[in-house]
Image (cartoon, rainbow over all chains, first blue to last red; front, side, top):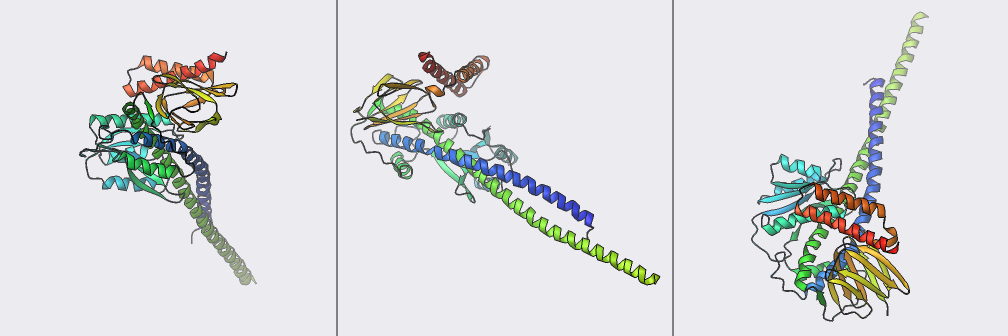
Length: 292
Length: 134
């Protein structure tokens, strides 16, 4: 049996671990709340954008715009949204498993240090990696969106896809890959968006002829890149919410494990202490017996 | 018959109220919107957006985006928007100076330069909204 001093030392270290993991859980929990709120605050914007796209989609021939035309896919462009820090359970591992499954030629764009490290370790074609602040300002997303859109236009990539941990609920996040460009069918897509976004408020439908300034094509040209940026922004927000909730759950498990271990160790320590006392009494009794 | 004005940025719903009229800066020039306007979709430029409600006129600085007028709803999607009394002149000036320095000092990628120009233009819009009152 281990000596009481050894056990005491272990108890101390487990207690420290529990304290740290508990603190990290609390931090992650408050960050998660904020991240979820931010993700929600993007909703009205999404529904408005959908409404605008819908209004234009009805009036523009969709075959002319490069964002709407499907072309043979030679190289996929994939934006991998990972985390900067570890200690968030299987979140990144799940993403990387998806990456490992991709065998077609692809170029990668990365958010988060972990993803960049993984891709360079596995010798993937890493085009750019971006640091993203915890608050996910829209301006930082623009840079990413614009770079990808430029490569898409130049033809070095033929699709824009986003691989991110989708926030399902606090306990589960799943790695998902979502196509952003080309928009296969604008009208169909807009209908889907409108159905999901406009559940609360239904604006009275205006059936009159809509006027465009300067003209419909030009508005669409400006609106579509904008839409791509916003879409990426929304994905990153969702990924952030996932990251923080995954970290919170991982830390909670670690804390619970530490508590359990602490219980076991305390029991063992008490047993050892009791055994030592019994031993001592026995020895004293034996010594007295021998002296008498 | 009042108009409903909604100004939304990716980060928040900045403004939402019923109003009597609004002047929107667009890429083709400023347009005034009154109740009964024809349906319109247009591109919003950097500048000053004036909201009239009764006798009261309030101003907002907006950056580029889009506006949709449909029925009695005016929706403005902007990358950023800020109400007049929330504008921090010093912060705007500082942001403008920083962006200008960056623009002058380094060789930039076009996208980055464009972003910085956007910062400058939004700062100018903020300052002009603020300065008009003084």
